[in-house]
Length: 315
Image (cartoon, rainbow, N blue to C red):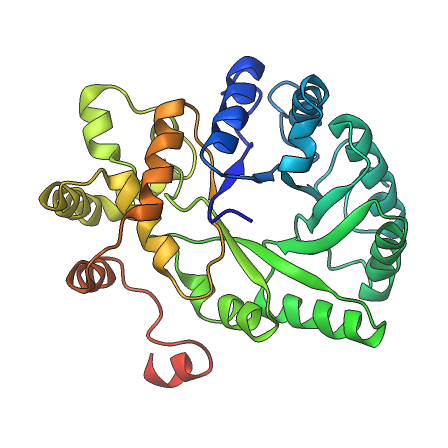
């Protein structure tokens, strides 16, 4: 599996189908074979659109399916119907079948639980996933947006069923958002799980937002989660961008290189909207930040003083 994962949350609405297909082709050319989507992505057009678009890409060149490690997700509402959301056995099985049809494939390599469902017992969740794995429709199961104790509950319930359990956790993780260092990443490491950070540039906040705003070229960083975060962290972002200028490296490349350098991280999920953004992300794979730069970044965007429970004492 490649050290970067091509995320498709922008496919449909922000990235046209033609451009999305070209980005997936280019990712494979770079050796990025890990592709992440979700059943509800493409909601700007209609939920399921992104999986449909990826399915058309596979259909156009069936060899792409075997070249790709395919991940999708289940759990977020697809409609307002009472059984069309969450992690009930019914919804998991029905959603998997629907994703397979949209993606035009016979299997999902990594089927991720998009959010914890506090109303669904773990025995029910694992029963449904065990069925899908035994049928060959799902190869591995992962989680997304879980707390550390949710991971522990899931893994212990899976162990009681002699089931492999979760192999990965996809979580928000960036220089600006480091709370997962407290318990989630230590839990994932303890259970031998991959950590797949999403939004490693915090919605564009760490991608040179101030320069882009001055130039009038800000797109993603001028909306969504980056807007309130910029107000909160303006002085830090200003200093961060100056640090990047001193290094002679683009801010997006530095922010991604930092995430790649973190213990426990397997593959950050990137969401490029252009070839240039994809190429810049790939360049981060070869950027090794010196210890003094890592120290400056830690001072600028401090994380927890330690993992839990030591953090409760030292904090």
